[in-house]
Length: 500
Image 1 (spheres, rainbow, N blue to C red):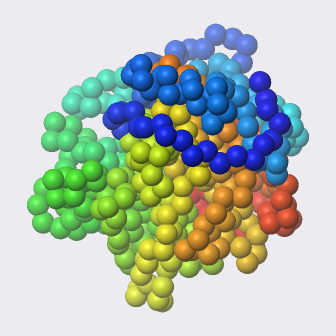
Image 2: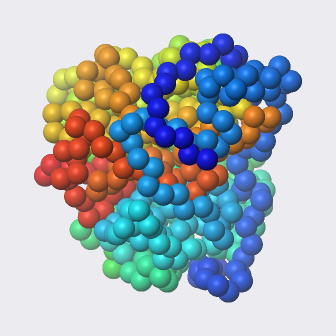
């Protein structure tokens, strides 16, 4: 059911639910798949909530404070053009990348390629079954990169789950040749320490460097030993991707002791994740800059020498940030938006009990020059609509909307939907548009919602974890100038210079 756009801001009394936070791919057409989706890679399962919470959610739906189950609501300046449900890949949808008329959608069971030449009617070009969470995805030229952050029996697309305590287990990066979009070919695999939760491309003419973010080492894991205080750097020759290899492991958090020099977390900083690696990195190649969201730390570093990144500044927020998740530069590279993934993306944190400053974005100005640049905190931003306590909701993946003189961003908030907001004034950010669905369930906390929401060549594309691929059209005088900016390729974690 779709509701016509309506303007609303929810202020509710709902409390918070307690929740913790093969070298050939199986190309799926009409034939049976060679491999089968692996339940071992499934994300957070459903959780029971109390009878009191269920009643509160029911009352909020009946009063109109939140949309009904699966109901769509949006601001007047957003149009929902279409939704493409999941097909033969039943796993959780994850990240997105773009090239020309194609969108590449990650899924815990593999990836799907869409032809988006008509955004109102995307067409599936191919689907590749290759289980291995999260299947974070990027593209560069004829190459597609896929992250595997679950312990597998081998590097093939027919692998199964296997304990990380076994030395033969595999995690890391997979590389595909996508010169034929209808028939992607798996061409390389590179094992990396602690796997690859996410990755970031630093593309050059002859080579593509891949920064691999991973974390949570354990002395019992042969291939993921502490201290894990840096990132793996992979060099992929474009003309010989089969020669892809790790060329370095730069330490970003030097320090004494078994855990390096990152945030110690609890008990020193209660409620804050200990830094044992990075979750995500965003690079701005035109400025030789990168921003790292590294569990308990946010960092700014130089990538002038891409094999040897150098930290310029480091910040912590031990009051309101639980887990530094991702980062986005503004176009002038004088601001960074960091996100806090409070509850690990599996909790209900967009409610009055959690408040506006936790599970939010943190906006930082970049002051100074060169190696003397500093990250200076200005404010928090969080969507102003409270969600049901059966909805996982927290700040997640987003991208800039390229408008000269403005700092505008579209962002996914899981079941909080898609938000468009303005942070031109670092101290006073504000939402200017939104799209969301009502809760997947009013009886249980069920994981779902928008994993990634990105602006690409005039439209917003969202990969909903449960519902599929959404296309939105934004019509607003503040954002419409962005329609004149056209890109040939977009990996959001490799931010382009939109106006070069």
